[in-house]
Image (tube, rainbow, N blue to C red; front, side, top):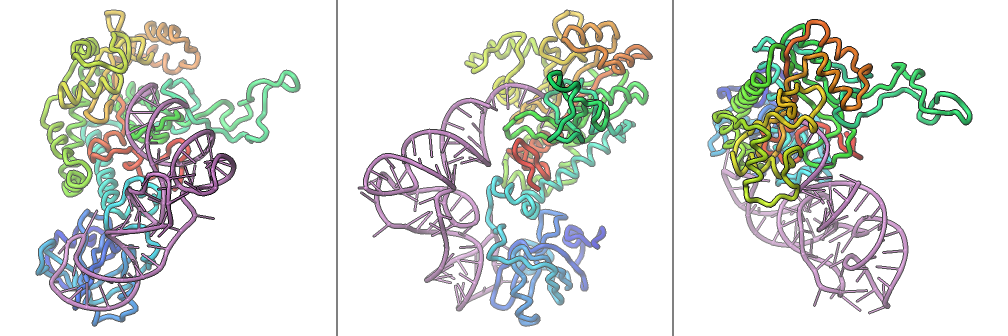
Length: 467
RNA sequence: UCCCCGCUAGCUCAAUGGCAGAGCGUUCGGCUGUUAACCGAAAUGUUGGUGGUUCGAGUCCACCGCGGGGAGCCA
């Protein structure tokens, strides 16, 4: 196997020396009269290792098999390269073709492909430059997130993926069942045959894939003070947009002794820290995105790290939009949620940086958000980013038992279903707050990629679960 | 789910209702320490599917499928 020190990344960063071994897949090959040049990539960095082969030193049948897409092991000496483009190159003395790739049918060519085509070959797109960079950034970002929370003393809580509480209220859920779909047991029989008899199902009641770990994270926050979850979440919405997935990863910190102000400040600090971390660790990959995908990415990230996020209240946002002189497809009025066009106007036209909007009308937000004293708004905040819209949604949670109970009832929900959530307010309640961050949305922001299906290894969307 | 656009060679795209085309890739040849190399030649098609209109359909119509953009739902 390859260990640290032997990746192509390490070879290229090191010194010239004899007897090195490199493994990887052939990106391209250029033939010259006396030598042929092979670009070898092992996924460790955007750069390829240039392998120089003198064909006369090798069996011609072997050389014929060194084609785009083939997998090689090459032994040789790592030497200064006489030509521009790379400082070191591998002069091959030994070549093993570990896996051939028939060039007549291998779908990846040197020149660019569309993201749509690459998505159709999800098992091979990982070998393209773009997806190499995407997934290196993804792992770096995930690590930066864990590191940030760990450094802040947060407990990493693994909230359940299967949940039997359908009270999360964040959208349509995927059912989880072991019942025979061809012969579903029902309550009663004959003419009285009623609803599905879930008492016979695996968990003895309806179960679902989670849409959020927040409520469970609150349990932990009210014992460990600061906690976070980072895991897959699921939405069975029929959403067909470049910003939605049926399976996506979400980061949800939950902090006790924290109000909305603390929550906002922390969210901003968090975003800046992890972005700076990726900029440091994946500089070459971000250069690639800036050059090939979106030439404003580096500028935007620099801007986010160094600027202060704008803070406005929902009421102020409405006022800005009303007085903008723009005509809106969706009318702007106090009490309606901000539409995509409104969010984009605020982030892209007015402030040209991330904007945090707070104190939304109670009616358009979830029951668990803490009521403000004005009786009209709740302590909610959304972090809006240019180009991709809402990237973080958070709030201070309602910690007062009587107020929460009233809100649950007012929204037509069954308090019995929330018994343990209410219990947390009954025994040692504490002010607390948190937020949710869509991991793939953040990936879009960092990479400049346009479609969320291209920043997750294996996208799940309505009608599609190949690979 | 709604609105709009698209589907032609492996890929990206041309083709007035009238002979199916180009570039890239591939193969072959040439040139060259090359850098998403260069020059020449060749091969490559059930025009997404099913119907329909027409003397004639890649082109027009209907339905279906898939993809893209926008919207809604949201992260």
